[in-house]
Image 1 (cartoon, rainbow, N blue to C red):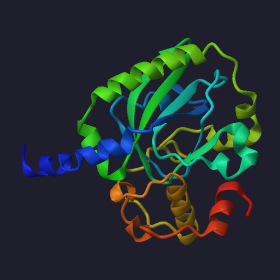
Image 2 (cartoon, rainbow, N blue to C red; image 1 turned 180 degrees about the vertical axis):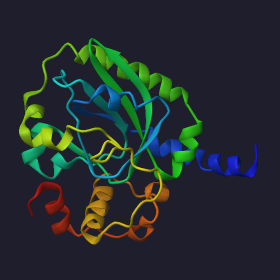
Image 3 (cartoon, rainbow, N blue to C red; image 1 turned 90 degrees about the vertical axis):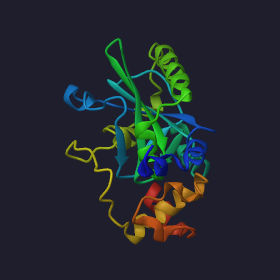
Image 4 (spheres, helix red, strand yellow; image 1 turned 30 degrees about the vertical axis):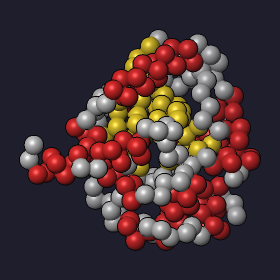
Length: 234
């Protein structure tokens, strides 16, 4: 193992502990073309360049694709905005990194299973598959097989929710993947939301602050702008 590889695995225990303990499954359904859907391949690392709305509620599917996300660092927005409890509204922070663990097709529907990983763990998780991955993939497939038989959850078909979720993870408006690097410094308004989501998700370590956002470390969220950005209200 050369020095560069040693550096990748140096913080492996911390990276694993950030990722797996307490990981919960979240749901994001959307309609994707075959061309877009087929670009999500097992092992691919994604960077999501915006706040990612997901639901803690999983039911049947109206649309053809489900992004199932295992995350230990999703902010439970419904806990601070009861109006969104019916959606099970949660959020992954801007510039979150995710690894495609599995793509599973069944009865004309596709589940793309993503693992939320810390920004400092991109190289580690790109080269590593754990026994935990095998276990959670099996559980994710079993859950998909059961949930696909259910009726969709009506609240998750409401216009408000569909407008926030009916597009692919990790792609811009032109269906191009965000580059893993070349991260722009966040403007003040978005930086406030970034800090707020970190606070709600209890994502307090330095493992998940994508450069050049290190200047946001240990800063407290400015509440007024944060809630306005997320909910459209103060």
